[in-house]
Image (cartoon, rainbow, N blue to C red):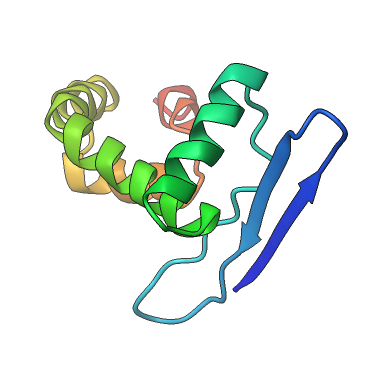
Amino acid sequence: MTENLAMSGSQRDNISYTSVMNEKMPSFSVGTIPLGDHDQDWFVVMTKLANKSLRANVANVITSYVHKRKEEYIVILEYTAEKYGITPEECFERLKNGEDLDSLAKGK
């Protein structure tokens, strides 16, 4: 993985990384995440106090978000699948692969 932490005069970090594609871990490129100065500063301080790298802490935050909100999104996924006449599993795969669900409605 490549980590790029660029500091500007305002101490604003631009956090970006590129994951190496392998079969067990999907590739995900965060790119530059724009944050307000307050959030950016606190994130950097909290990360340093936790003795973590910024990259590791970003991954931790994303994992925490997914675990916290997954059940909520399962309900939305099921609704969306029913709306388009597909299974939740197919809906998940199509969205994961970047497919446009509106094309399903046009085909009907």
